[in-house]
Amino acid sequence: MWLTGVACGLVGALATVGLMAGTPARATSVQVAPGQTLGGIAATYGTTVSALAAANGMVNPNLVLAGATLLIPSGPDAPTVATTQPTTIVVTPGDSLSSIAVQYGTTVAALVQLNGITDPDYVEAGSQLIVDSSTPATGAASTASTTSSTSTGGALPAQVLAHPDRVQLQPVFHQWAGAFGVPVSLLEAMCWWESGWQADVVSSTGAVGICQLEPQTVSILRIRIGDPTLDATVPADNIEMSAALLHDLLVETGGSESLALASYYQGFASVTQSGMFASTAQYVQGILSSMAGFS
Image 1: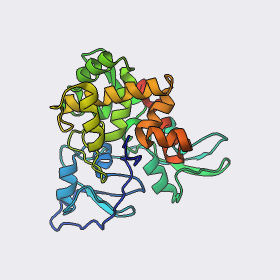
Image 2: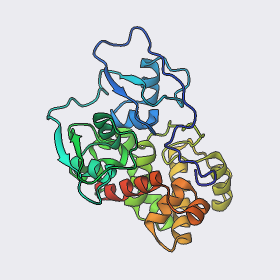
Image 3: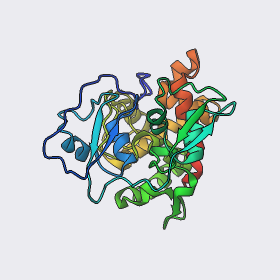
């Protein structure tokens, strides 16, 4: 991600998703929006990549077609049922889909799907949008109102609290954020946006784990930290390397959280030479808007 300049949340190669016979009748379906990954969808609906792959007969869970319909497994990890009716709002000057999603406790993907938006980076002031605030918020777009305190003393989104294995990662975030001198809420929100704090997420570009690190980036960070045994598939190692990278990017950008996040997503050289891409600005805004929901 940092070295290749490829945003890990974007799907580079697309394949049609096959549906598997015998999927539970109570399963809920969702349409894949442009830029979504299976990991992001799993985080949104409180399930796992492997469960989604099994429910939809997917051979390669890293490849998913925008516009395809996925079945969300029912059971303990079934998605939250909508309890409110959609609302129509008027877009005001300066609004973006990310800011609207954060404000109304929904997701960019849900806004895109509900309103038939073809370009999520553009929204016209004065236009009307349908907003369904009952949609489960994805990744770091969860609002502070959906958070609760944990034993560590910090707040976390409800979707983290629903998974004890993810809650257990909070002390690890605190440890490495402190070790490298980066804001813990910035590190937590960034990695939540990247994977939903899921260690088994692998992007179409090969980015691995909780904070979505590219293999080349891992190789450099092992040298930078001085530990050749660091493994991006191990949650604590992944978070340690990401904290080190975020620290270095904050130093390179003069302490600018916005530019550091943009560089993490788009690549430092690319941001320096070309500025933030529209998708990068959306990524940055989403993370910064959600930091209050973390410790």
